[in-house]
Amino acid sequence: MGGGKKKGKKAAALAFVGGGTGGAGVPPGAAKPQAPGDLSPTAAGYEGLDKAVSAAPKGSSPVLAAFAAGIMAKWPKAAQVAAAVAKKKVKHGAVLAGSPVLGAVANPAYPDAAETTVQETAPAAEADAAALPAEERERLSQAEAGAVAAFMQASPDGTVTVAFPALDVLSLIQKAKEKVAKGSANLKLGASDFSQKVRRIIDVFKFRRAVKESLPDVGAEEVAQLKLSYAGPASHLGGVHEKHFYTDEKGRRWLFKPDKNTGGVKAAVESVAANIARRVGVGTLPVFTVETDQGVGSLQPFVENAQPLGPDPAKYSPAQVRELVRQHVVSWAIGDFDAKHDNFITTPSGAMVNVDKGQAFKYFGEDRLDLNYHPNRKYGAPPPVYYALYRAAREGKVQLNPYDALPVIEVFERIPDDEYRELLRPLVEAAVKSPRKEEVAWWQRMAKFAAERLGRQPSPEEVGEEFLRRAVERKNGLRRDFAGFFGEVLGQVPAF
Image 1 (cartoon, rainbow, N blue to C red):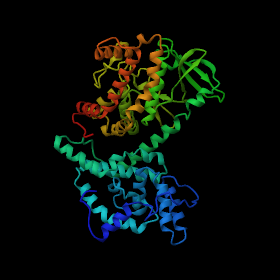
Image 2: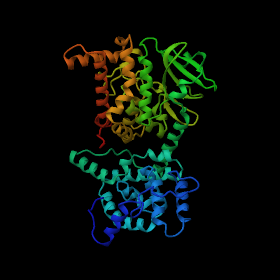
Image 3: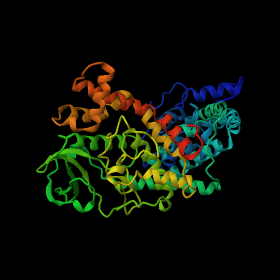
Image 4: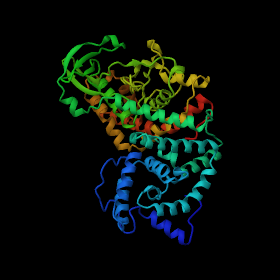
């Protein structure tokens, strides 16, 4: 952390602890005592780990430390921070999140070492944290409080949603320096007391848990084995495209959209878009390309008793507002401008998920991240729900935090380019094979771009490569794009 290394007796103790939380000469995971009960990254799991350590015979500290470290090494960083705060009484566990000594601080097998580590490390880190702008200190506190809340509420999946960079003091300091150098500042979006902010964080965790519980847990292998029976048309659901219901052998209903115009490209785009959204942790129904008695098309689970999201942003819950900001990152990444309010559903459990990404990439290559860009206006369609949300925020009707987009942007950035290409590959392959690919708008556009770049008529494979290249560029430019967009829409550039 900041402040440099200190010399003397305490420095040696710190080096020993930081060198490996398993203990001197004992690699983490080398010994694996049997521990009963829950060892998940929650308060209950930590209590079980603590009991296992306490019940062990004296003189086995290195082995126990290795065992405990092996368990906790699998925990999210946010859970380790929460363990340090909630159980070790560390004043500010978040200031250790970027340090290799965090595991030692939280490890129940080394209380003395943890105390020494905190004495040595915390002062310099606290000084660095104190030097942050007030908004960044508050952000750090919120992130730490969210980690603790999820930890105590036994929601290990929730802890993962705490953006690790938000807990990294060194990263925050660097961003603060860059902000000063560039003359930009974080948006001040209104103040409230700390307890209210903690409650909002818990609300986010509950919302995301509801989303996870509402989404059917099905995979491609299970879908391939389904025995589907036709259950009638689904035209009453609205929309301009044909829809049908099917039921499987378990009585579950599925929504099928036949692809009669593009030779399978439209079905592939829905499936690929849903996979990308789910890859970055945004609530979306799984979609599969299948063939039924109605032909080739897309198949997705039908969520019973759900209602479309309303058109008035002022009536959205804080969790829904946050989720829509996150959803917008995905929509821009995949060029989807059909994210109107009724393409989102709310479930009885309080979840909100997107159910239609059939227009992904339709305008890709000519689209803009701009409130005035509404290509479906000519069809009489309402604009993307995000537009109304941002306008309401600009008018003071909705409290919106652009930093809710950042965790999704960061997940996109961490996806290797080759992996992202493979996520998109089924769409490219479907287009290359389709006898009607010339009727696909984005394909025509990519063919033109490829011809301009190559100076000749491109092959279908070269057109596909042009699409992949531009899609990867879009993924890697999300941070820049949204910083500029929020600066334009909200009047001040966030320091992403």
